[in-house]
Image (cartoon, rainbow, N blue to C red; front, side):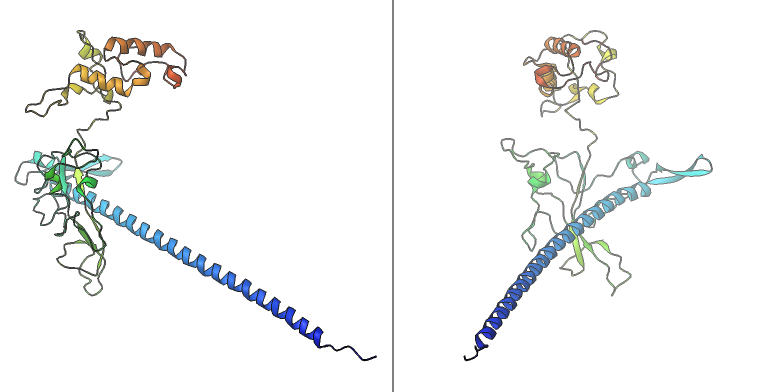
Length: 340
């Protein structure tokens, strides 16, 4: 018999080896593609996180700068008086001093000189060519308004600036927060922040007025400072007013000390000068609106409100309309243990 040739067996072995090598090549190629894809995604996420952190640090630095300017204003307009606070420790007290307008003028922050008319609670904004007088500190803003579009097309509209509704609306028929035209024409200007320049080490980094594009600028910010001292939290401010107030109303209910005892009749109800105060009916409507579930009444009379409140005080914990209510009238709202 003739011996069997080994060529077919060798060919099949080579084919199997080639298939195995190709499979490993495909596997390695898949791993390399997955690695590159994951690395690209991680790089994008890291870059996004870096920019978020960078913007957050810039915003925090801007806040520190603005607060620092107000603190410096206190120092500029005061006499430093060390006081012994006990134990050998000295505490520095800043007493307002007279620098031309009387000491009383330096007890509150100075108002900016270029503010929008009709916005009495706006006391400061970042503005170009800031001419605010001592003891205040200028904002170092450049001649670029926040409503002007930047190179990437971004800007801040006056409606966005008034998202807190601290400025009076210009058109009360709209649902947005568009302010009065005077504020639209006087929104804050940009303050540009430069980094350290090794070429001119004597020039400190931070806010800087620029007149042309500067490669050392690392960010910008703008700000507006409002006086919120006269604002009331309408969720808790005020109390119901009866149609006929008893003689002891002032001493029993009108004692100040908490926001619930705020006298809402001091709020203006009209725009004329002098304005008309809020009526007792309007105040009761506000109180009943925010306590609608508790009062369970659509009436604005105090008698209905007092009756329902007294009933709620005697009901168990889970009572009115399936909601959880307090079992007793809060002592901070009334000076007596019973309702009127």
